[in-house]
Image 1 (cartoon, rainbow, N blue to C red):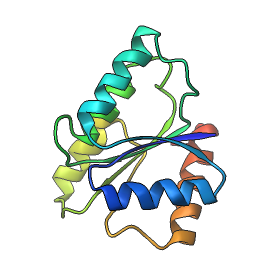
Image 2: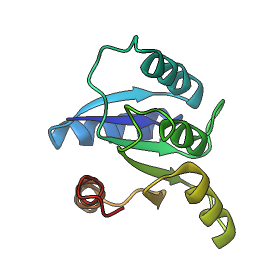
Image 3: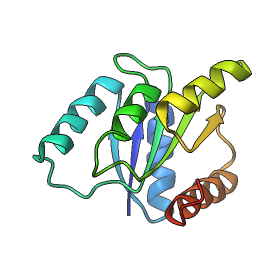
Length: 137
């Protein structure tokens, strides 16, 4: 199973990639929204030949395209439309901003940084993925 990680903070991206590996998942990681957007171009154009992710973990605020914009585009691509998408941010959001971001992005969940401890994060992400697969998101 492959998980997509788009995070501009290298330390966080590497930690999450390492955790995913410990949990038995392959990762497809990008350091910013711009590189993720180009990957989406490849997926949409049919030139990407790798395994598509079942879950995406996207930072909201990063250079280029934001994580919520990447998520919104993913929801428009048939091959990625039904994967579980989790947004993450270190910034405080008003209830209105949170609702708007979740609605326009089509994300399934939003988590705040600092990220939960390793076991809590594992349980949370696997639960989100299972609910999505069951059609409960």
